[in-house]
Image 1 (cartoon, rainbow, N blue to C red):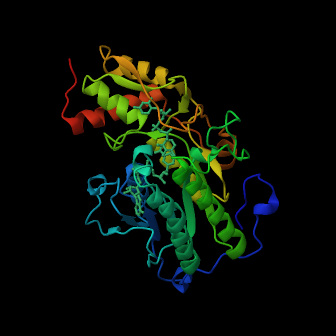
Image 2: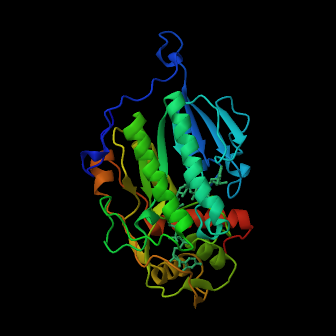
Length: 346
Ligand SMILES: NC(=O)c1ccc[n+]([C@@H]2O[C@H](COP(=O)([O-])OP(=O)(O)OC[C@H]3O[C@@H](n4cnc5c(N)ncnc54)[C@H](O)[C@@H]3O)[C@@H](O)[C@H]2O)c1
Ligand SMILES: O=c1ccn([C@@H]2O[C@H](COP(=O)(O)OP(=O)(O)O[C@H]3OC[C@@H](O)[C@H](O)[C@H]3O)[C@@H](O)[C@H]2O)c(=O)[nH]1
């Protein structure tokens, strides 16, 4: 029985998990682990697929509607005997036989999740309901990639998993912030009511190669601007903080959570906290010392501070991030240079 994080024992379940298909108990035919990754054509998802495919006992199925993801992120696996890519929108039911579900399908960039807020909340609510229904039918363990946005504009800093958050229920970010909170609620309700094996990761800002170049997130924006000799656009006040986790650390954390015995929620992120001005200055120093930095307007409900308390990840998962921002940014710069066709000035 999965142990829950220390949010009180009201989260435990007395129900045994649903039994998986009899095939799993066959003595002779040891099938591979069949893993579904929803949103696997995206930034984090495609790196997760890379890592899962390293294990020859894994078969990976990716479903994605390509709203923000791209087949290009998975081109190395298309045609591989242990890999399958299916165009599917998780707001529609999905019939596949799997043993684990990594449920990542949801646009992550604020520009994209605010583009069609109704679709975003449908993806988070109906999409998660569909994936939980699938997990119940086939007896799969399911991991939800939730977010630090469930803490909203936090009044507790750094954020621990016990903090209930400070979220606007009717703002322009609510489709995502509240959508993810409902997704977490559904995960725990299925766990308590049906015994589903759940895992919840609260992901903090993650960066690295394969981020969409113009997806509007701060790290991708600053690097693309520095490479294009455009001013770095620091959104006011510029003193707001974020903590940035490199994608390989994130993927290792997600797999440890899935393979471990703890339901979560568990913060997965890098506690290294920076203001947006400090981030701009670091990008300027590392990538283009001549680039300007300018202040621009921000959007409503932008959280003023964010930093994960990762005590649980360390103690329960034996995980902590390894890649510092100063070391991760050049790896992302290299990827952006290749994709933008901008060579390094010698
Ligand atoms: N990157 C971050 O900093 C961050 C932080 C917190 C949480 N997360 C979460 O991690 C997950 C992955 O984020 P990412 O940064 O890789 O974003 P991303 O936008 O690159 O990936 C999301 C993927 O989901 C797909 N998708 C979106 N809606 C879908 C739908 N209805 N049906 C099927 N596929 C759909 C997209 O096409 C894309 O491939 C998301 O759930 C996001 O909320 C990311
Ligand atoms: O060009 C920019 C873009 C953004 N910013 C600022 O940088 C900060 C981070 O903004 P981003 O859009 O990168 O990301 P956010 O922190 O808002 O959301 C991010 O973390 C939470 C996740 O769930 C989201 O999926 C992820 O995108 C904000 O304060 C924003 O105002 C800039 O200063 N300049």
